[in-house]
Amino acid sequence: MKRLWVIIFNLLLCSVPTLAWSAEGLDIPAELGKKVDLTKLSGINYFFAQWYNDNMWVYAAIVTALMGLLGLTIALVTDVFLKMIGMDVHKIEHHE
Amino acid sequence: MGIFDIYLPIAGMQFNALILIAIGFSVGVLGGFFGVGGAWVVTPALNAFGFPMAYAIGTDLAHIFGKSIVATAKHRKMGNVDMKLGLLSIVGSVIGVEIGARNVMWLSELGKTAARPDGFAGPVVRYTYMVMLFGLGTYMLYDYMTKDKRAAAQAAKVAAASRAGITLEPKKGWQLPPMIHFPASGITISFWTVTGVFLFTGWLSGFLGVGGGFIRMPALIYLIGCPTAIAVGTDLFSVLFSGAYGCMTYGVKGRVEIIAAVLMLIGASIGAQIGVTAVKYIRGYGIRLLFAIMIILAGTSVTLKQLEFKAAAQWMVMCAALGMCLVIMIKLWNGFKKEQAEKAAYAVKEVK
Image 1 (cartoon, rainbow over the protein chains, first blue to last red):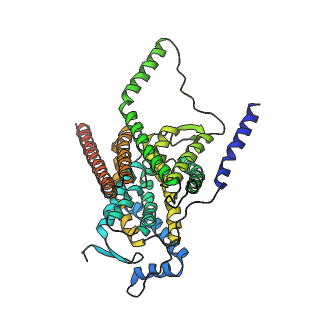
Image 2 (image 1 turned 30 degrees about the horizontal axis):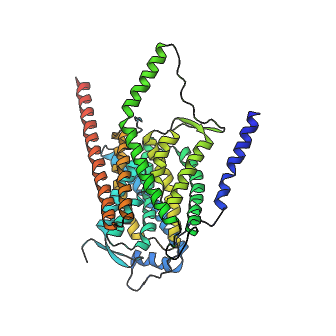
Image 3 (image 1 turned 135 degrees about the vertical axis):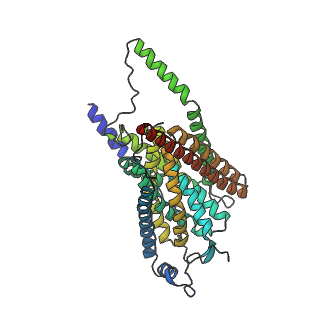
């Protein structure tokens, strides 16, 4: 009997997310709709600005991938550097 | 053009690179130490220095994504990330954010007039935000100030029970199956409790239009029962996913200035190393005390903004962030010196 109530209660709780579909969606920001002037740009600035103008999805993918890769690279490099200078961290004991 | 000025191709303007690195650095320290994204510091800081607001939130989210990778990796080395709990938090949070955002839309339509284009949403959200910040900060301060008294009362209770030959049962939470064990946090808890807590925190962040790191961190401590350092690391792990999603969403809308984001990430990466390492030297209640002070100052800033003192609100939040960074760095330095002294004393003892 207790198991049956647990199952019923679990099913009721599973229906809570349907509240999310009661109205309109998240307030996603509006597209800026701007084009970057490429005439005075060169190198990496030109590369980013060109994708920004041509294909926003590719620009967003480049930005996201770049930030992720940079984050990972910095994490690895600082790990190695801090280990070299004796400031590496290890597992800690959790004291409140 | 100053010597540290750099051209931002998407925003189409010159901007001081040092300011971006400095903002990133202070947010990195706070983020690494408290497990929060730090958008509440970045947006007013960028606004104060003339960064175009159209790109502020998107650029901030992009740098938060990169910074949270750096900080989470370091917290993981220290054993502060409960990945199972972090992944589960995303499920509840995403649903909660969606419900919260829709509730705000509904409030916006309610009572909408020409004089009040936001309907009831504006004032309700602002006052909820202030009540939440002050309420949470006050509770955490009270928790810190009464911790010794509560520990003494508990010890007396255990001693009295032991003298009477009674074994005190630990307080049991809601035990609706399925129960899940989180070995990293050392807790066993109902799946529905965890999901419910993150549904609530997600709802709050969707309703208030904030990232939610500063809501989730205390929720992990007080409602789930995580040790403080694990709450910090696990929260950062969740921020990583929301940062990635935000970066992509705002990127598609053309609202990310990539060069600015990279410069902020460089500063944030250095700051995060400091913030995360400081967690090693400060006990859990110390982190809670500093967090309480920080959100009370944030609440004061929001109140100033509500009272139309916008410049004062901006400067207050930046000074609070810089002041807190300084405190964290001093604590780190003192902790590091103490550790070195203990190591030296131990080495001398060994030689003898």
